[in-house]
Length: 151
Image (tube, rainbow, N blue to C red):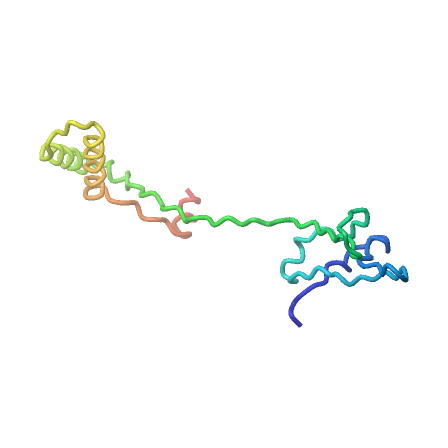
């Protein structure tokens, strides 16, 4: 119907722990206060019972439900690191071109007084030169992994 579950009735307890309302005059007991929960989250309820000893100034007994709270966290997708194609550095021509590119880029920029600005300048120079000369390593698919496993 509404995908609701009455959680009071699914746990085995003595009859005295299931009775929720007591008629003050006739000593009639009944189970009229119910805890409804969606069937999808029914596994979070661990136990439901009546606490008869608690005084709540009513002809109803206190109903206690033990709920296991499930907290989900949202994971942010990490940005993949760029991996340089270092196999290209086996060629002396590429190494020489990379070194020359870094030297010319650093010589073009002026020296800064702030050490942090100088560091970011050097870092961006190295990264940009690596992108230009060395290049980014391409991801291997499953075929590349299988072929390398045979070696």
